[in-house]
Length: 191
Image (cartoon, helix red, strand yellow):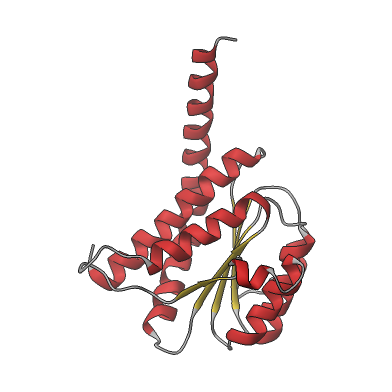
């Protein structure tokens, strides 16, 4: 297969995944947009993000996008990423994310988790701590892994990206994150 054919194939697969995800995930993404807006308007609750492996960058991106706004256009919104280096020096990913939640989170806060699959033990341990503390949890995952379902409750939101390969999952996690931001901005600022 030629390089050009590979490029075309990748774009076509991405478009197909996006169209399938659009049909499947609109309700859940809208629900998360409303949930985040409610938390950000509360003045007492916070939004936490985290991720594992390659998806760690998506959590960092979402928090950064909410904190670093266009100068004079939008105020910074309270979002804490649990993968920040100071937390990571406390121990393993699981320990540091759980300890950070115990230190900063309170009941009715929201944790948005990005992972490639639902069987990642580190993410599942972090979600368990969040549930113990009374947080609502949003997970944005690939199709693989069902262990996370044992932890989530009816108040939580599970968004499954309809893709098997890691690159496509991450591409769509970024798309979903940008959609969260767009929904929050629309609700809070009218644009």
